[in-house]
Image 1 (cartoon, helix red, strand yellow):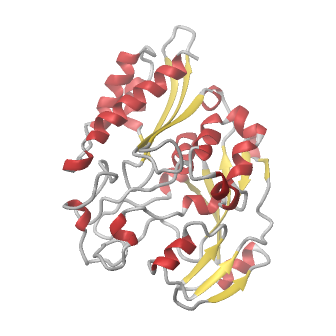
Image 2 (cartoon, rainbow, N blue to C red):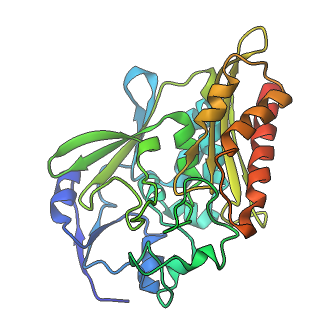
Image 3 (spheres, rainbow, N blue to C red):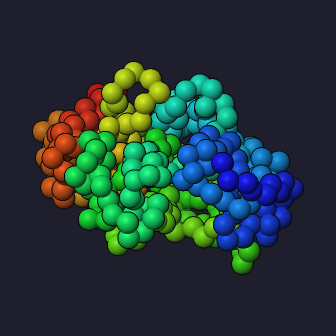
Length: 327
């Protein structure tokens, strides 16, 4: 591991002013430290943000919840307000990683974890995300787990977070502090498409610190919600495809409001807005759910070994919405 300097921040403002080019914020460290051991991440400075007062879950404006960026994943998943009003969020957190990792990982860090593409993690191999212009061997190599939506010829990596998929379906917003001030960023606008330069995962600058995650006020569509994850083994595995969904039906059985986000199919949590539009006002039936899923997945452009994800995603959307309609 490359030598680095360590600094302990005492307040959010202190943290962003200590950070500089080449610095990384250190929270739970469950992804960052692993990548440092592999030589993928080589920061000159680590700014420890674990002593900041960001470990609470508290009421937010207009009836929502504000989750401190330092809240541990296990604590967030167990919070009774989250379990009651946003079950999709609790289920997504509990489907990720192991119990030990959930006890260590933080909400803010979860959103910034990097792709698990094997070429990105192997510094002996080319990778446009790690070293722009070096190539993307995944396109002709091991790409079974990689993207079918929104990819480019320069990168087909996927974002690994379960938590972010649920937040995208909930229309959550991030509270971000920077040296020039504070701002809010919708989770659906946090991640960048790979395009010609996949090296930057998000719209955040190196000195931008996520201080919190704001959930909107709960409603029927958030309370009637769930998270489903398909993976190669029953625990401690990243998703092949995941779905976060919420459904609110009118008294006549038609769709009044629906939320669908898909995970592990793109560079970011994929909000299925085409499917949502196709379902508005339509009967909440499996046939309509399948038609809408097809509308969304018409944009899929899979590679040979991950073409199965298209049908898998369609089936998971239908199963999730059918289950919600029956609840």
